[in-house]
Amino acid sequence: MSFYTSLSGLQASQAEMSTISHNLANVSTNGFKKSRTEFADVIASSVSLAPSQQVGSGVVVQGNRQQFSQGSLIQSSNSLDLAVSGDGFFAVKPNAESATINYTRNGGFLVDSNRFVVDSQGSHLQVFPVDGSGTVVPTGTDASVSLRLPETSGKPTPTKAVTMSLNLNANSAVPTTATFDRFDPSSYNQSAQTTVYDAVGNAMTMTNYFKRTSAASTADLGSTWEVHSFVGDKELTSGGSATSPSVGGTTMTFDASGKLTAPAAPIVYDEFTTANSTAPQQISFAFGAGTTQLKSAFNVASRTQDGAAVGQIQGVTVDEKGMVNASFSNGDTQVLGQVMLANFSNPEGLRQLGSSYWQSTGISGSAKLGAADTNGFGKLMSGTIEGSNVDITEELVNLIAAQRNFQANSKALDTANQISETIFNIRS
Image (cartoon, one colour):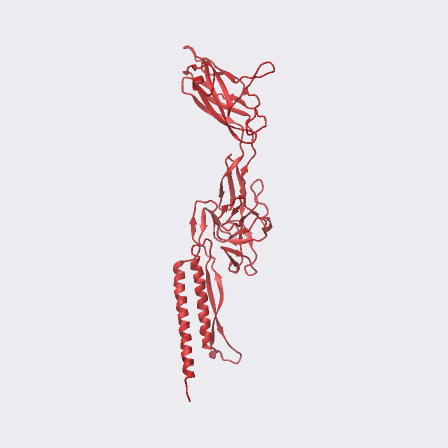
């Protein structure tokens, strides 16, 4: 009988060493939770046997209990690297249409080719959806959605009005080349650029060329200038009619104090089309109240335009509550959802699936869903990954102890064998 008692001890020690080896092998696995082998003694008893005469029959492995203590927190530069400081699991699905939900503590997420936020296995991070105001809508399991980053934000708005305030240098001479040519710097004095947008949101450069046409007298600053406007390679014209063609240049006049007197109203240019948009577009150009001609350097004090491009996504942030915010190149911001966390009455009852995934069981209880930093859930940390909770020193000490237990049971088995051999050698 002692053979089997020692054998149970050997098997138990071997199981413990396997558990410790598994822990050590995953010391660098993000989100990994170590396990601890627990044992129970075996007692063979009967009603007729006195308690003082009971002899144990060995040991059995009662179970491998998972230890869900906090792992080490490692900072990173990726805002989609998430860690839960406290209780809670991330919920992920193998794909957007799947009904299966797995749970993980490994928050190393990235963006795939379809703009879904996924983990290293390609599983989709689940979030609670939000409405147009950024308020979280129903928070049940069925309401969760896969987090997907939008490619753009907003609608394109073509530029209709441009306003510019500037100072033209009163000391500027009349250009030596009489005929304006934008490719000939000797035919104009200064130029200024403004970014404008067509009907589909493409950015274009509007360039205004300023040419002095008459010099001021020594007594005052009064003089005239011309402004020629181009969008890309297309010159903007105005003033056309059935009897007279449109012209490109518009005359600017300044009084003796250097104040702009004309044009008093915005210059409304004729409709034009661009290479990227066939929709006709019309732009008006106005000089701001601060436009002057003084004896100081050419300077653009301000410029505004009312067009807008479609915003391209530039960044994503996640706050402590798990709210995912996207920012765009046109200044827009969008709340994309709130990271869904899950917790369980008995996390130790979760079934391990590998790849730092767990699945709920009848022992763990059903998932309780919520948001970070509420109802007992931990805080969410962006730019942080939770590492393994394995302590190498502790595991090595446990491994030595398990090895000694194995050796002791081996010795007990050897002793039992020697006793049996002695009995077999007894002669009458």
